[in-house]
Image (cartoon, rainbow, N blue to C red):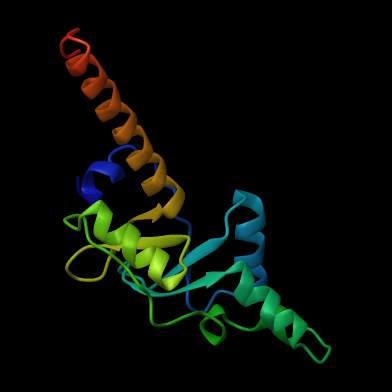
Length: 149
């Protein structure tokens, strides 16, 4: 199965923000939508980076006082080397990459780097679990002579 098949089940789960938006705006978006990552995009919806809860919390911990952090643009704290995937990527390959890099979410982009969606490791693992359950049921029916469903 490919990423495009998983995206068809989603309904706009990605949250985006511009590179000049304030860190406080990104934090408000994370809190309002109960999410852990915001994708930073340009005006043509190309992925420039990502900002996570950890990025914001890390800067707050290092803050020496004042309101600098809240008024700084997200481009100051975003991760610019974004691991992403395309619609055509295999779910197993994307899952392996996410586990290897310790990622919880990965943007799905088109050939021009424009954001199409966002997939989570949880979604990938859930899909694989459901597929394994179906396969197990089919094998059980085969072995016990019930036939396929």
